[in-house]
Image (cartoon, rainbow, N blue to C red; front, side):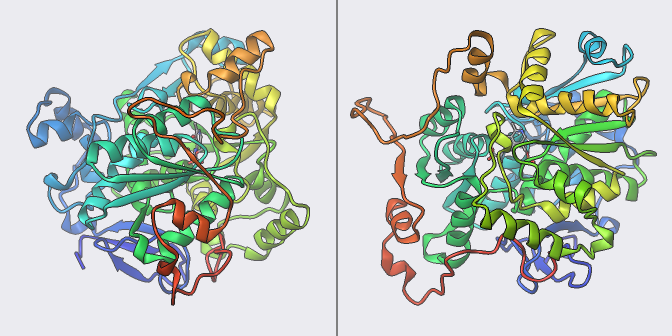
Length: 491
Ligand code: F0G
C-alpha cells in the first residue's frame, strides 16, 4: 500500500485501511463508507492557498498545462491519490464562477455584496458532477477498469457518459422510471452510454447497480456513484474555487441542496483538511436543503436529533425510519427530480460534515423551489430546480433568523437551467411538455447513431442480460435480493 494515500473506513470503531489500488465502495470489515486519507507529512503541501495562483497563467496541451487548466486538478496537492500526473483524467472541467448576486440579494432580503452564487452548471456536462468524475475516472484508470456504471437521477449519468466516451470506456447508466429530465437523458444517449430504465425509483436503481458491482464481479463494473470515495475527492474542489474567488477567505455560510449527500460530505472533508493543514482560519457554516418530498436528512436531523456524535451514529433511528417507509410503500416525490432520493447513501458522511461545519438542515416545498429557481433566472443566468432549493433555503433561514443579512453567503447552483427546460416552460406557460413516463419506443429510431434506452424490470437476471452479460455469471455467486443501503454494522 502506498503510505501517502490510502482508503480508510469512516467508522471510528473500525478504521480499517485499504490500498488506493483497490476499487471498493465500502469497508471490507464493517461495511461502512470509506474516505481517502493522506499522510500529509510525506506530501508536498503548499504553505498557503495563494500557492495555487501560479497555475492561472499555465495552460497548454502538455500534461501539466492540461492539468493546470482544470478547476479540479489545479488543486491537485489537496487530492494527491494518483501516482503521477500521467494518470490524471481531465476534460477541462471545473472552470466555473462565483458571482456576486446583488439583485437577487435584494429580493431575498440579504445586504448588498453579501450573496454569491457558485455556478456549477457551467461545467462541460452542465452540472457539479463534472468535479467528481475526473477523480473517479483517474482512479478507474489506475485500477484498469473497462466498464463504468452508475445509477442516476440524471446528472451523474450525463457526466459519466461524457467522461466514459472521452476515456474510451463503456459507460452504463441505470435510471428510474418516470422522472429523469429530457436534458439529462438526451446527454446519456448522445454520449453513447448503455442506458437502462429500471422499473423502480432512484433508490432501487442504486441498490441494483451496487449489488452488481460488488456481487457479480464477472460483469467487471467500476461504480461511479458517490459511494465511490474518489469521486468526492474531486468535489472538494468546488470549495477551493469559492475560496479562490474570495481571495482565500471563507464565507460565513455555504448552502447546498441535498440528495444523495455526496456534495455536502465532500465540502465537510475539504474544510476539515484545510483546517488541519493550517490553510484556512475559519470553517464556514453549512446549510443542507432537502426538498420536502424527499426529506430524509431533515427528518432524521431535526425530528429525531440524529448527529454524527463522533461516529457513534444512532443507527436504530435510521433503520426505524426506513422500515416505516417500506411499510408505507413510500416513494419520494418532488419537482426537483435531481434530489428525489429517500435513502441517501452518504448519510453518515453528511452528519459528519454537519458536525465539522456547524451545519443546519432544512426542507423547502416544491412551490418554494420553483419560485426561487425562477428568481435566480430572472436576475442572471439560471439553474435547474434542485439548485433553486439552495436559494429557497436561504430565504427560509433568513426568515428564521438563523442567517443574518449581513453575513456572507454562497449558494451552490448545482446544475444548468437547460437540464430541465420542461419545468421552466411549465412554470411560465402552464403547459406540461413531457414527463418521460415510459421510454418503451412507440416508433423505431433510425439515426445511424441512435442509442435507444432499454426498459427493464427491477430483476437481477433480466438486468444482467440487458447489460450484455449472461445468467451463468450469477452461478456460485451469493446474491442477496436486497443489498443493504445501511452499511452492515455501525450505520
Ligand atoms: N443538485 C443536482 C442538480 C443534482 O443532480 C444532485 C444529485 C444534487 C443537487 C444533490 O447532490 O447527491 O451530492 O446530495 N444528483 C445525483 C444524480 C443523485 O444522479 O445525478 P448530492
